[in-house]
Length: 176
Image 1 (cartoon, helix red, strand yellow):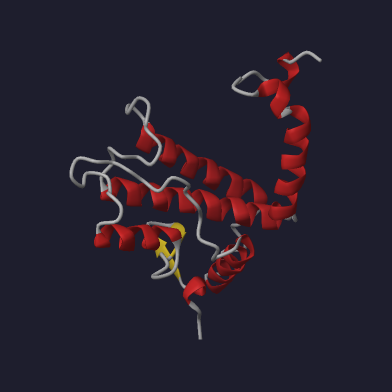
Image 2 (cartoon, rainbow, N blue to C red; image 1 turned 135 degrees about the horizontal axis):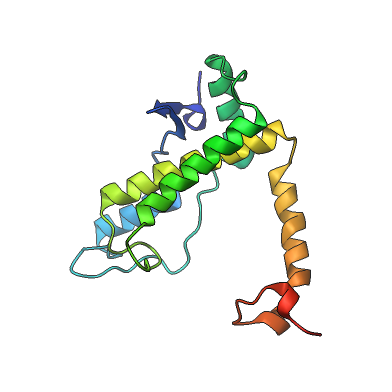
């Protein structure tokens, strides 16, 4: 029997994870809004969002990897899902994300001026990017969580807070 996090949808040729029904931060925010504890965008003219956005703890990257591997295997698509093809598909999906932001000017954090439909479209496109990224990492045998830890440690060395605070310069522009 498939668990909630193993259920997958396939829409317009793009793989996406079925939205979770309970327990995640978004649903907690929506429940709070339903009680009147938080203002959702457009509600009473306010666009307040939770102070610190967090992702839900499930599914993990490994869960997503397993779901997508099963999804791909069930459709006999591994023959097409080689690193180059996955990379190009991911770049195409990034283009679809960029298209959603095109001509909007600066967009405020939390997307207060976006409709629910626009937010959902963005969520689907970002999900496609993540799914392709995770599958690309799998095919290249890159352990993403460990790679992120190594990269963050490297970034801390390249961009020490004491030198770069409030600056957008590249690390090569800083002097000791």
